[in-house]
Length: 373
Ligand SMILES: Nc1ncnc2c1ncn2[C@@H]1O[C@H](COP(=O)(O)OP(=O)(O)OP(=O)(O)O)[C@@H](O)[C@H]1O
Ligand SMILES: [Mg+2]
Figure 1 (cartoon, rainbow, N blue to C red):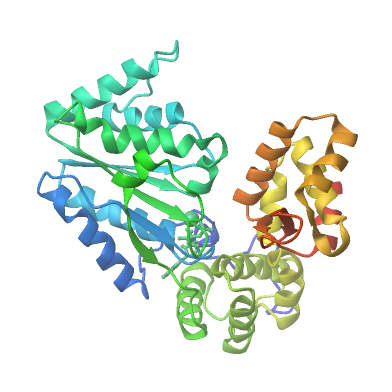
Figure 2: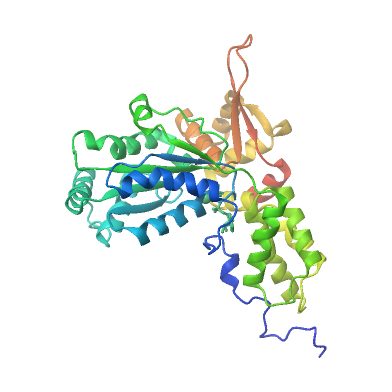
């Protein structure tokens, strides 16, 4: 056997974990300014006061989740009187499930599975925080999943106004949203107390992507697996896609392509082949999480000319197929929006009044093939 060939039980991956999407990197460079702003928000909590609320804004893959997790690690190392809870709102999307997570973090066990009322759950949390004299910081990550049914208003109300009746209750919120700004209009009763410090996460530049991916590849692959030229190609494709996560996924898939050929190194061809999947990472991931009804509406939108249509027309088509009512239609639309698959905008106050336009945010053909799978 030639020695550039891989034996069947050999691998190119020194540490495959580093290419997983939930891996928290040890080195988190290029985000010093954002980390500084986040630390500033937390400072009052370290002194036992309510922290400044924060809102991390920026496109996918710009380090918002990583920044919050790193910050929480720092806080926990530093003090026990600040309790941090990271909530993935795509998984925990209701006030009850979010406070169950908070309960679990504080008590180390989940609330009784027989179920207790929200009030009891909240009272236990508030009493425990008061007796420990602790401040609570809750990260609402991917907060757009709390927009349907206005769940966000209730949650912020409970976290940020409870101190009015329970003076020992001190909590702050760090929200993360994968958009340049938050368009959701909060209930005025929470708007007046949330007023977050907005922390912007711009897309990484090419040299930053290069540095991050190069370090990740060094950790993940054995020496000699990824040449400089091939890394350059990965970096170009990642910069083009604008999402660092695509680059990390691309490294992993390209490594697997090379292994499939039993080669000891990754070629440009491996990268190009892998890119045909990695570039659609976001769409694939989002579509996999959809229910049957959600897929139907997404397919209808994708089939409209130019992938866009007026909301009224879409509703009529959707109703014709599923018999679903407007409320259901609207909830599904909100979810597709939270998943960044569609965006809504209003036409100006023209002759026909304001009407809502729904537009697909990705290539219709790519969506159609995937909803049918
Ligand atoms: N500065 C950095 N250094 C090293 N790795 C990074 C850096 N920023 C982001 N990453 C990596 O990129 C991936 C995406 O980062 P992260 O999940 O923090 O993005 P995000 O802004 O939360 O994206 P989304 O809006 O989609 O939730 C993660 O795997 C993370 O490890
Ligand atoms: Mg995130």
